[in-house]
Length: 70
Image (tube, rainbow, N blue to C red):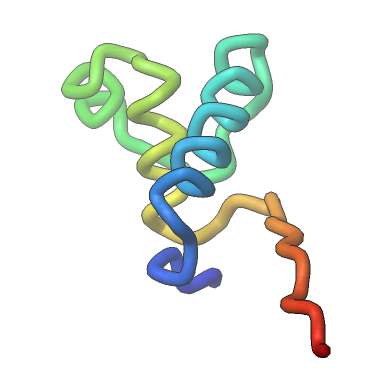
């Protein structure tokens, strides 16, 4: 499980957007949800990817450049 608080708001948006695109193209969900949960979010790929992100189960990594030493 990944700690989601270490990402910037831009990284979060990029991760959720990339996963939402995958879901909208037919990728299987990583988390299991009840039918009433699907109906509550209206099968929205962004809401589904946000739920996966908040649970910390997405296998997406962020590479950041390290600061240069002088």
